[in-house]
Structures are given as C-alpha cells and as structure tokens.
Length: 324
Image: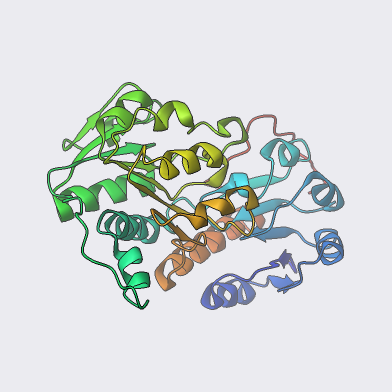
C-alpha cells in the first residue's frame, strides 16, 4: 500500500490517525512554502486542501496523484477543476462538514449587526461612551436567502424556527423538494433585494460569479435593510458595498471574509456599520471532525476501494489516467 498524503495544513488528529492505521503516510505537514509544495506534490498520491490553492503548475508536478480532497465546501478556492480534470486527478469536497457551524455563525452575525452589538462593545470602552440606538426586531421581518444549499437551509431553519423570521429564497438550481413549506421561493434576485429586511448570501464562489452582487442590487434594498456574506468575497463588488454603507443606502452589513487576503475590501473595515470576521465561521471542533471524517471516507473510497469519490466535482472534461 504505502500511499502518501500531502497535508500542508493537517486535518483533525483523530482522522489522521484513522488513515495512518489504514497504512497511509502523511508527508509535508505544515510545509507550505512554494518550494515545499512543489516537492511534496511530486511525491504524493493524495493531497488535502484546507487553505492552499493548487494551481496548474503544482498539479503538473503530481505525476501519480489520484485525488485532491478539499476539506471544506468551497472547492473553488483551492483548484480550477478543469486543470485537475485534464490530468485525471479527482477533485472531491466535504459538503456536510461545516454547514451547521457556518449557519450558527451567520445567525450570530445577523443578530450582531441588527442589534449594533459590536459597535456598543467597542464604544462603551471609550471615554465618550455610546447611547442606545434603535434596533431591528427580527421576529416578523423578512430574511432573503440567495442560494439554498446546505448552509443556507440550516441558516433559514434557525432564523425561522429560532427567531420567527419569514424566509424567502432564490435558487434556480435547487430541487423544489428541498424547499421547506415555510420558505417562499422567488423567481429573481431583484425580488430578494427589494423585499428582504436581511439579505444573506450563500452562492458558490465560482469565477463566473465575480462581482455579481453590486450597485444594481444594493440600490434595490431598503435603507433599513442589512446585507450578510458568509459565502465568498469574489461574489461582492466591495466598492459598491462600501458606497452603499457609507451613503446610508443600506443600514449595515457583515462579512466572514479575511481581508488580509482580499485587500481591495479593507476599506470596509473603516465603517462602523460593517462587521467583519476573518473567514472563521467554519471553525469548530464538530465541523473539523465531520470534514475530517469525510476526507477519510473519500480517500479510502478512491485509494483502497478503487471507486469514484462520492462528492466528485470535476467530472466535466475528466480524462482518466491509467498511470494514477
């Protein structure tokens, strides 16, 4: 056996031990310089992607790698699927690892921005202090959800049953059977932005979706409405969001985005009506264990049982390579 797994950022320790018991060897743990990545990609049979991007040059060095296993949901952050497909490298991801944790974080951010919690927490520590401000009451308000995948469904459930919000959703690709009775499905994004008191973004971060949330949509929002992004930075035009917040076109926004990576959005941090967390909502013991166990299952499925990954995402243009 002796298959080698390159994990530049390790997964859950228990899950790593399970793979080692099955005969896998981890290499290059915490080794993620460009030269390190070149070295270990040339040696591995499997690579696990948590925070790193595996470009075409790195994939070209992986002469016998069979599987790139993405630890989380956003596989678009880690590889261009076509680059792996043309080389016969499977790309698989973990759709059920962090949806609960991210949804909980989205609820927390929703409450924080509508109740001014972060602003209060900062200003009560200053000599000037701060007086109470009017806040949105979430019960009975309308929450508009863009995209209705696992995270969005969990968020909608918590907002409806936990906080008595009304839910509308836009997702032209969703199976209608997955839409609960309490959710009103709408036909356009424009209807979500013009109707909702809170708009929550859950659309995949594909390259063709870049800047899809822009001035056109912010101009449709109520001046009392809020915008939440726990999806990906690439989806939002940060200049347009900044202008909408600065001008008071919308009441506030929050984003789970690490702006040390996406520096064009850093000016948003200057605004009091903007809340930021550093792409941290997916991190919990439970989510790391679930995502790690999915990695274990997929790696064993492909490498030991000779099957296709269960959550295989780069079927289009896939060219099998018998040498892998």
